[in-house]
Image: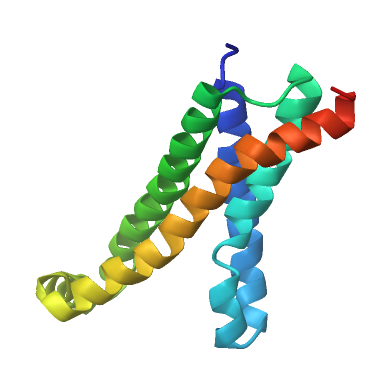
Length: 149
C-alpha cells in the first residue's frame, strides 16, 4: 500500500481553493442555487484526486485505501469547514460582540442545534457514501477502462 498523504494534501488544497471560488459564485446566484454549491468543492476535488491516484498508481484503490480515502476526505472537509466557522465567528465578533453572543445562545437552543445537526448530516452522509462508492466500484471500472485490466 502506498502513502496516501500526498493525495490528502491534494484534496485539501483543491477543496480549499474550490470552496473560495464557489463562495464567490454563490454571491452572484440566488440563494436556492447557492445552497447546492456547498457540495461541489468536495465532489470536484474527490474526482480530481481519484484521477491523480489512477494515473500515478495504475490501479484502483484497495478496499483499505478506499476506507482511508473516504474517512480522510470527510475529516478534511468538515475539519476545515469547522475551522472556517470558528475563524469567522472570532473575526466578526471583534467588530460586533453580539455575533459571539448570538452564536453561543444558538448553541444552547435545542431546536437550532437539532436543525443544524440534521442539515449537516443531510450533506455529510451522502458525501461519505458517494466517496465510498466512487473509490470502490467506480474506481475499478475507471481503472479497467484506462488500463485495460
